[in-house]
Image 1 (cartoon, rainbow, N blue to C red):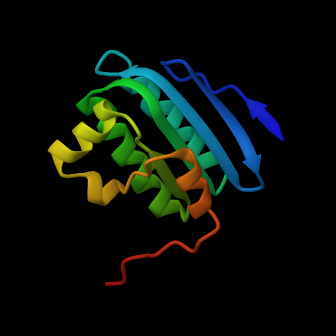
Image 2: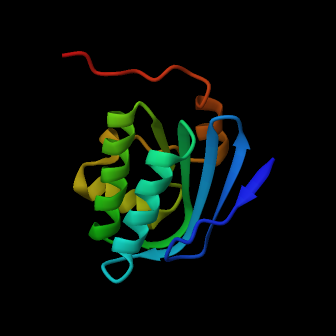
Length: 129
């Protein structure tokens, strides 16, 4: 198992837990002051990292709309590149933002890291138009 630090603007760590899977644990706040750096590092991880990135947001204290925009961008980049981004919400501040904006169903957050990791091996469902 390899552990790498990813310099996100909040206290965070990145750990490759299995072939093709990286978990990024983000703690603290993502707001207008640090969302640009958060987005840059998150997009790098999604585009250049493993096929599946699990974002563990369960210890975040604040998620502003600029941070939410970064999460939406990560999902879009993952879809475009054939990768997956799974999000663990698990806190009121993250769940509330997703609920109020109506993005909970689109981003489909998991309640725990264990639930997200259990879903890693399952095939991804795609919308066919």
